[in-house]
Length: 262
Image 1 (cartoon, rainbow, N blue to C red):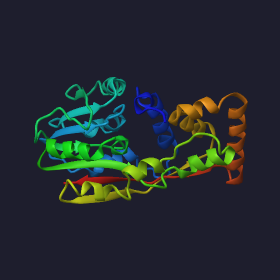
Image 2: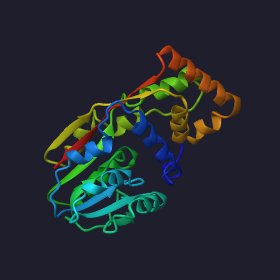
Image 3: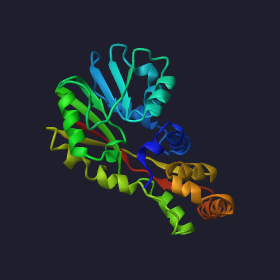
């Protein structure tokens, strides 16, 4: 299996995956704006984001960020942090730090809010990570953790396996089984007194095949190495036929939501 550090050494792969959602989501309420709307954060708050990626969430909500929030963005990848800092150069009061969520380098009761979007399913020792998050939260503090469900983007795997069942592709369901919409509340309940799940209704309706190819090639190095040359062209023809069969577009299921744990 591809190492996580290779997949997320910088924002290149992540950017390809964000792009398809930006262009082809059926819910015209932007996911990142919706996330921000779900937050209940006081003006004078200390905030730690774990797994900040390239900072797209904050860039999209830049004009909405209260000036008195004290925000620290972190990621296990130094390349991601560098990309985030570059993208958010207009937010000079933000701080950046490379952090392993299993060993958060801050004292007890340091933050009012911890944010961990689409990252807890990557953590090897999730119990230790949740203990650490709980430790650095102040009494009454909150964790916001977005994740996916078992059906999220299931058609991507189907498109690959229908073309060639020998191709290596790991579906999003692998992540959801670790920490997803279906089992996240149970895991969080061991560390937080109340857990609430908010769902985001959405899907993808993609009218051209190249964004699907770009997405798939960004997910796995093995798949990228296998889908080359003539094989890649044949796969594109396969996608074109699927698009034709479905009246000019390829529909993709999305299953996403946000846990608020207090």
